[in-house]
Length: 385
Image 1: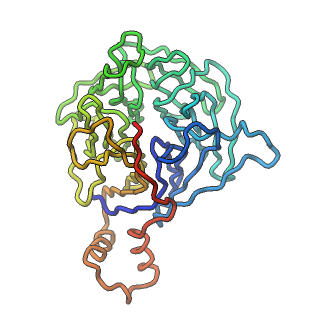
Image 2: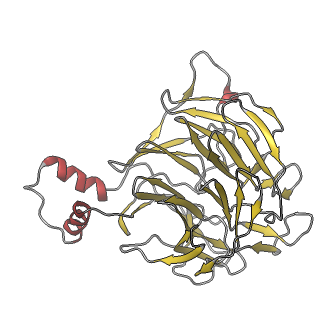
Image 3: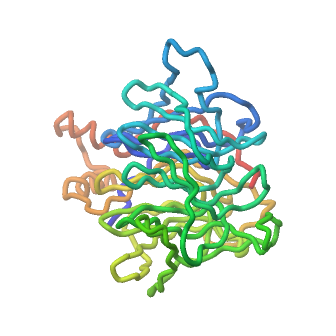
């Protein structure tokens, strides 16, 4: 396991949502310093070719015969993206004016948006929730509901074949209300970790009364029963705005933020569902700096981490809420099984070895692995949240 490269110049984004379709990663929305989060401009789409490590900003449109801007989602943060049958479904999220409960679909073949009509018990608009696909169902959990001004712990499911929503009546003790947690599907279970909760029994958000749970929960997707498994090992500190992903039957947690401890993280934890054990991982190579609100997407044996925000201060020292944050346009790649070729390319770059006699295709490969992208122009630091 090794961080194999660090490439700057990608999309500078915070609280974006991303998924992989084949060898491409699609990243939707989010914000960065200097951009208005109040305007109803259409959401932007950035696409990463994970073979060449090059980003493009994708021009998108609706179908030519549809001249209705309502099928173009407005730019937002705190939304979710899932993929089903080469189509990407965006749900929830907000700008600084309002949150959204409309389902949007991005077709990766035709590069166009639609807004599929849905029926049933449509969830209230929210942000900071999670969405996971199991079979042909999209499961929504938690988040912050604008209409009720409360954190949620409800589970909703959308049938992606019929576009019918259902509220799920779960069984057993359930996890507390929360937003900006993580969720992954593994072995027919939806695992929930972390997030920001509240001490208020009415689920209202009260500044300074936040709770950061370090317990692991899972929902059995066959029975809809909640379980709170006993875990062993080195358990992560409770946090929000972290990333979770699955590789080779195990769940991984990276980064995040704890407002009680005033700490940002760049640690990587592994959870083995067979042994129910947590382990702190120590990958080789240059690690990303401490951050939150990034995206981590698995393609093959690699994890592509990009974006997010960090305090200007370095290391694990406590973060002052009045301190500036800096938004990232970087990308780090974690390779679980780096090949001999990859390790040789890293060595060539580290020691600045002469590559003039190498085949042109190999020289291009080496350049792409380390050369900056050209998506982002530098902007000032971010002093907000």
